[in-house]
Image 1 (spheres, one colour):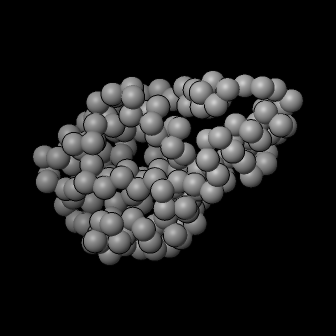
Image 2 (tube, helix red, strand yellow):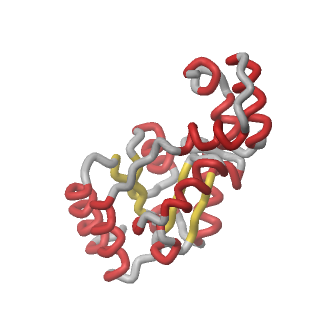
Length: 170
């Protein structure tokens, strides 16, 4: 499975919207010599996430400061639909002004296109955007555009960095 999905470009093509769920399933079945249903494959690749309840403190702090927030995610339609079906409070759309998903804009972090799409949708210059991500390459790409960045390590540290940015955003 690792070779079929992650060591090939299959996941990247799916997360950039270049192939459909049916195409993804067909390729998995071809490589693994299986006959799995699309529904089973989509569930298997999607039911891997866990909620991050502590992040609610960050969302609440942004809301109290009247700062618009958004989601910028490398994901495919199957993952996003599964996540939305969980109704986890941290993914409630009321928290976010914008949701930019790689499969919709056909560009994935750390490629410039997804950051450009985010800036356009947010109507913000790079230095007006505070961005956190757990991957160093995604942080580096955002920082290169002038975004204020924090490589996620903990909610407490994120809150501390966010407080500093709220006091002195530039």
